[in-house]
Length: 100
Image 1: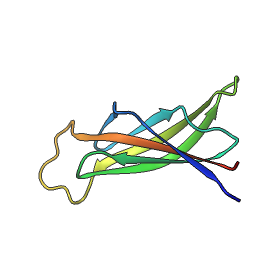
Image 2: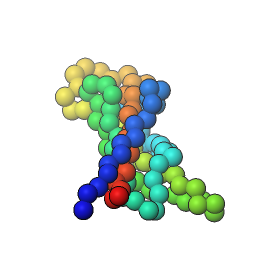
Image 3: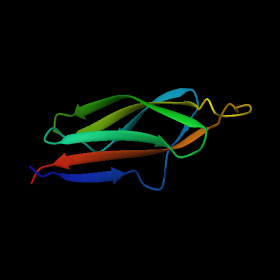
Image 4: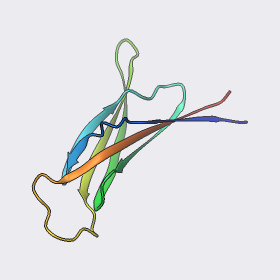
């Protein structure tokens, strides 16, 4: 059986998250009919991003939304002090797998 994989990236307006915070980010991707995979990546050096949970949400009108709970910390390889408002720009991706 062959499959088709489609990848969706967030745009150039990457969101920023401060170190040592956990935030829920919402993506308008995902549905109950296909397999979806999600990833979060830091766009700046010395940053560590953990994708804590992926939560699928459907409202009464069957609109689909996916909530990614993300924790951002300083990578252990970082040298020097870290300022109170330092963090990283984020990049999210959603991958949809379908069969013809």
